[in-house]
Length: 102
Image 1: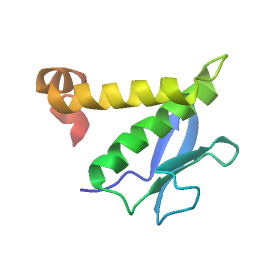
Image 2 (image 1 turned 120 degrees about the vertical axis):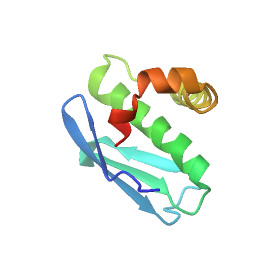
Image 3 (image 1 turned 90 degrees about the vertical axis):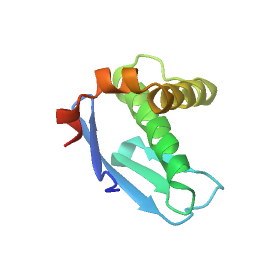
């Protein structure tokens, strides 16, 4: 699967880097001041996907909300959104029609 290299959040382009363990025993990190999302490439692909969604939510929170979401809120949202998108093909198909996935 081709991994994404950038995402635009609130009009700001974030570069996505898949790197070896970058310390702090984390799966990922968002560096808003550098417009970067770092993902630990040494974890499973599923963990990378959940982590990318998690870090995108941090970027949304930082760019678009008056009050940033805390870590527990982002964890809950990212895990449940990922679960829904993965397990309910009707929802995924409706939200992401085939032409988007090309």
